[in-house]
Amino acid sequence: MSNRFFLTLLMLSMPATALSAADPLAHDDPFTGFKFPRTIAGFTFQNHVQYPRVGLGYALNYVERGGTTATIVIYDLNATGIPDGTASAEIREQFKDIEPSIAAMAKQGGYREVRRLEIAQPLSKAWLQANHELVRADGRVLFSYSFIRAQNGKYVKVRVTAASSVSYARLPLLLLGLTRAIGMMSGQGKPSE
View 1 (spheres, one colour):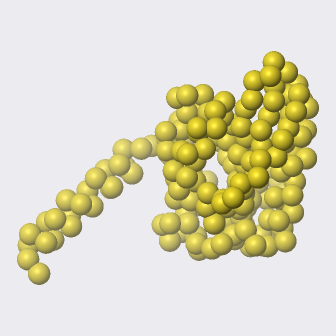
View 2: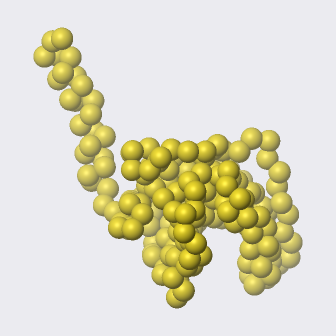
């Protein structure tokens, strides 16, 4: 193999390294190894919320330029041995809780109606997904997309709220960024279903 081949490989790898080093972390979780950058697929970190009870974990809030928000919640409900992925009974139970959670949030926020949106194909096999349409008191419609999985002994729940269904097309990039942040693509955690 020639030096030109190795030089080409080096040049191809440099932008990826420079990009990861240039993007500072918004949150580095030493217990799970999760490393959340300041920006994920156009969403910029806003704040970190630590919940008062340990089992409820913490939330990271991100916002996109167009106003779409993403909240990432990392929690374990004081449970241990939560299996990675989306297939366990534990994660299925957490997924079932999304519906009443959205209904309670809508009631608190004064929404007139909540409708579950059925989808033909989920955006990612690595995440369970639920979609909702929220109708505000003034008749404006918001879209809420919820994703959940377990990784490194924690539940990882993501809720994205958008004023337009157009935002849906950008969500695969957000999910890809999140799978990297929680170590599924870097060898930190086991990529699992």
